[in-house]
Image (tube, rainbow, N blue to C red; front, side):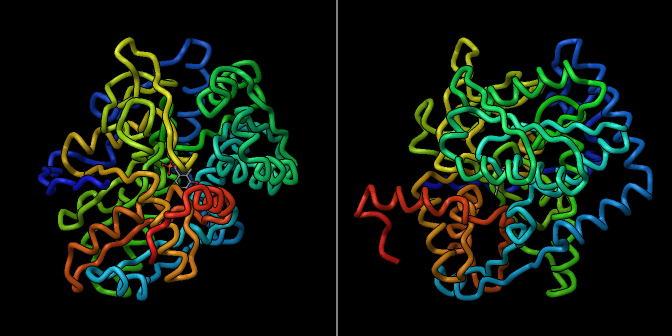
Amino acid sequence: MINSANQPNFNLKKIDRFSLPDIKGRFGPYGGSFVPETLSNPLNELNEAYLAAKKDPNFKEKLSFLLQSFAGRPTELYYAERLSQEIGGAKIYLKREDLLHTGAHKINNALGQALLAIRMGKRRIIAETGAGQHGIATASVCAHFGLECVIYMGAEDMRRQALNVFRMRLSGAEVRGVETGSKTLKEAINEAMRDWVTNINDTHYILGSALGAHPYPGMVRDFHRVIGEETKNQFLKLQEKLPDEMIACVGGGSNAIGFFFDFLEEEDVRLIGVEAGGRSLEEGEHAARFEGGKLGVLQGCKTWILQNKDGQINQTHSVSAGLDYAAIGPEHAFYRDRNRIEYAHANDDDALNAFQLLSSKEGILPALETSHGLAYAFRRASELTSDKVVCVNLSGRGDKDAMEVARLLNKDRTFPRPL
Ligand SMILES: *Cc1c(COP(=O)(O)O)cnc(C)c1O
């Protein structure tokens, strides 16, 4: 089931998007830095270094050169004509972040933070990964710069993503399995933080989404803003107008906020983030933080979290590992309160259908994460006329998911619906 988003009704005139986060890392009531004292020093040091780098034209120049030569930017804006005809309604455009090196948007942030680490004189990189996409991007960037790289990954995720573990090792990273708790992403983040505290002098922690304690959410957003900047220029050049609606999937929220940021003041452009509706909206069966989540603190950040009434973090489920996390980035909560970004969810089956439809109509295999955004976009497009334009951020490619999709489709032979 896909829920329908409300019509926008917002007043951004009073908000200066560039003033967020404030100096304490807050987006209104969200964000901030809820960490033990041992972590406040490294976070402050990182914040100072980032603020200095941001003002340094040399840093910007190096980063944009690498985004082009190593990562493959700019990415194409593609009109999915056969898909649009099949759905019948608005024209669907895809921002092709799946074409980037290592297969997803994650490399934008990994490159930015690695450059920052080098500026700070840190030659050892650590990172956490769930499905492996952020680990692969980080390992690849570290190989490029010749940095030592340690990736923390839940033992359960390592088992499920054995190929990705091998890919990271081929790029020279050490992958450390985490055996505590549910042996997935949340535990891997805890372990990475522990490592950081112990090795602070030579180590930088490359966090993989617009989440965690200040300065991560704002910094990760900034490294992904290039997605929206390019999209805007491409639309103005190609069409001489902006899209009517922009849609992206939301795990921690990095691809979505990077895609949306430059459109926040464009009142005529509707912005919609799509969460993972999982098997159902029962507790433990999904990862839609705005459906059943509450305000709380997780891993350094105040935001909407899936937790039970005693504040214990709930189990989450999604067919896509990259959306399967109990907290959402704090900036999303802020713009949701102001009705500037709307949020919807798509469930596992919607995503599997969208995966197959894009693959068969366009020969483009989307990541299962991305397929959630696509599923909702197809619904929206079918409700609009052909003079309207819907643009989806194609956050990553689906090669990594092909085996899992094959397994799921085999299990239930009545599925998928015939195309
Ligand atoms: C990691 C990932 C996501 C989810 O992360 P965000 O921070 O919400 O962008 C979405 N799509 C792909 C392809 C990913 O690899």
